[in-house]
Length: 431
Ligand SMILES: [Zn+2]
Image 1 (cartoon, rainbow, N blue to C red):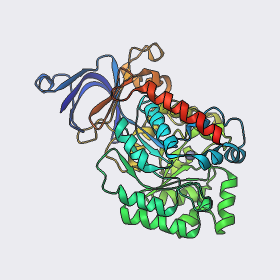
Image 2 (image 1 turned 90 degrees about the horizontal axis):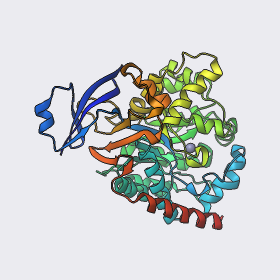
Image 3 (image 1 turned 90 degrees about the vertical axis):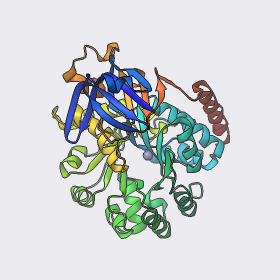
Image 4 (image 1 turned 45 degrees about the vertical axis):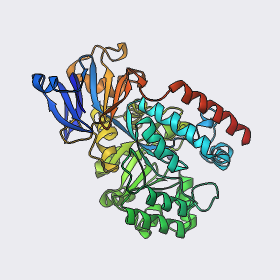
């Protein structure tokens, strides 16, 4: 299947250069085969699908580098509490009663919301990954599932089960795959961390967990293992390029340096960190050290919205607000985090409008009032500071149009919302 998106405003990094120019993108099955000028009429006429991009901004699909597809039941209910109390009162009780059918409704709702925000790949820490893998294909979104593994509590995925799932999906050809994940170091015994580390090596997967989110969590790690998180990762042979750490609000400069040297990636979650009063991650310093930093929404229970536009804007504004320096975290820099850096962490050849890269693409309405007047040279600002999910026109994943004119082309959106409401109400009754 050959698709062409004709005459759009292209906004993308190509290596270290940001492009903002008019052009056309040619896609053959799942791959971008050409990023062309406008005079490619023979090529255009041989395409099976021609999309007129004239009134759109075309960007690579966005990566949500840290999310939890659920429990969505507590969206808007688990509010205004300190993090530990919030976990004890709502999050952990919801996990304790979570069933497979709840996870199914959560995955569908979260993946629909993300696609409609231009997210084409999510690093998703949740339960029942075998369901997430199916829903990823059903809705047409790339998902790297990293189960909430723990063996100190009984209601998360056991290490044995996670290793089994990593094994089962190690040769998957669909859009979903399973990597190694765990909730927190302090929720895991030594044996659990050993099994997970070995599985990541054996099946060549990444490892994802929360770290340095609050000072309390760091203290819990030190209590259990007698050393700082960075040394615990080292002990279990996890301090390397496989490791992707969410949050990282409280690492020391020496720890940041060690992370940079080891090639660790960070998922920055500005909205969640502000809402739960976890603090402000030292992202400016991370970038100075050369750490690969992507952007994540975290889940709906801590953010309420899986909106990559909100996250890019907050990532920029928060660093300026605390530093008093309006030149930090420019629009291009956060855009790069949500496209190039996210894909680098997930080891995907995607995130750039470039020949040979995966055709995960987003078309944004260039005629929307909130992003006009639009000039070629300010289109990056339009994407990062002005756009919102309501401006999404089309989303392509793996060469297939999944969102067309703002609507999912395969699933019944109303049904997904209704099922999530029913599952949510039933879960709340059981807490
Ligand atoms: Zn999280």
